[in-house]
Image (cartoon, rainbow, N blue to C red; front, side, top):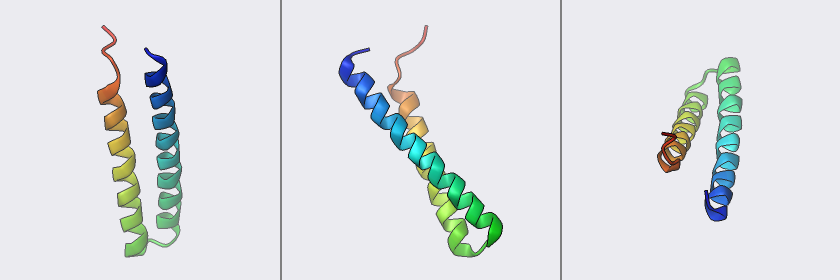
Length: 64
């Protein structure tokens, strides 16, 4: 892995961590209120996390 790729993955991992934190907060808010706004925020947070995870998977070199 090059230094640039390592740095880019570290930045991506930070974004994944932030997205996971946002999803956990959104789920907690949905559990307490359950109003449609909270549910939309939760769905967006989950979609954002999934997109970041899929992107990270796509940029990793094969392990074989």
